Length: 106
Image 1 (cartoon, helix red, strand yellow):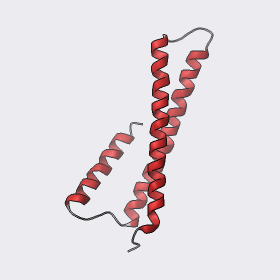
Image 2: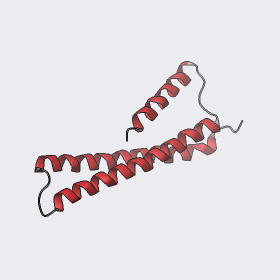
Image 3: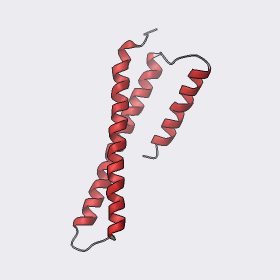
Image 4: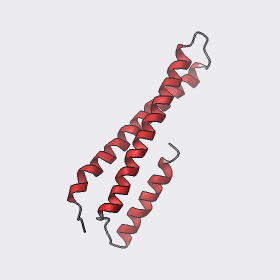
């Protein structure tokens, strides 16, 4: 998930530049890089969410409690947020794939 912040920051700078320069990003090559980056980040977010959920489940269902209830509930909340982040990243990449046919193929 540490890659999501630099990727999002880079896309924000690209969007800001395209707005200020009045040069919309309609090139399919640049757009394909964005789509592939979003897909890779969505799969990495799914891996992070799954590992967090399995760790929380392991800590809760062990014979001896390895974490206090407050800490385990934080693991569960972080797993839910990671799954929510994965869903949003996947929706973003799928919406970009949906927009791909309308780009100019210059």
